[in-house]
Length: 229
Image (cartoon, rainbow, N blue to C red):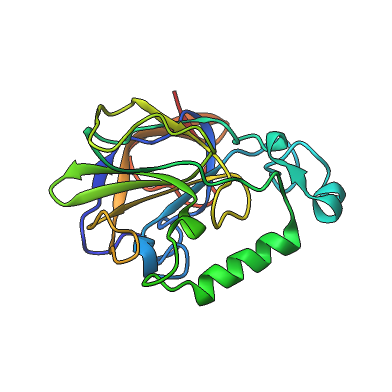
């Protein structure tokens, strides 16, 4: 699903195998809202493709439902995050503590509260974004990499970065239902007022018909098994 506006091509911000449960390749707005620059945003997680339901954690479903899951039991937590473009770091926020484990009820409550009651004029954007990095890619295009692991941000404001450079790690900070990378392009460095911009990824593989197929300038759907070397 691609709207009339041509997507901006960037490099995939992760390595290894990934799934995008929320993606503009399946619906727009991908997160059910145009707010906070999220119209074309992606969420990326890692899953066990061999298990029913593609779980994102190394524990049983009953344990997840009853007791929650420690962050280190999630496949993607702590995975390296890479700069999707050459650019300048315009925001690099760290120090926002992650909850030590996921909990279905409290995480749902937190997500509902932020979705319905967050006021960008008076509330701290870190309560939603957690630890995050914003890169100015040029031409009024800004890349946001959100919910990063506490203490993992490796860049600072004003620093130049090259595409493919490690800049942080996948985390569970802010308004995060489970460890994942939230990624979006925007027309402003201020998430609270930004409009989302459509983007596609310059190269990745998708597992189809028993083998890996190369995709150029693609937008994955929420069923695609994505691989980036």
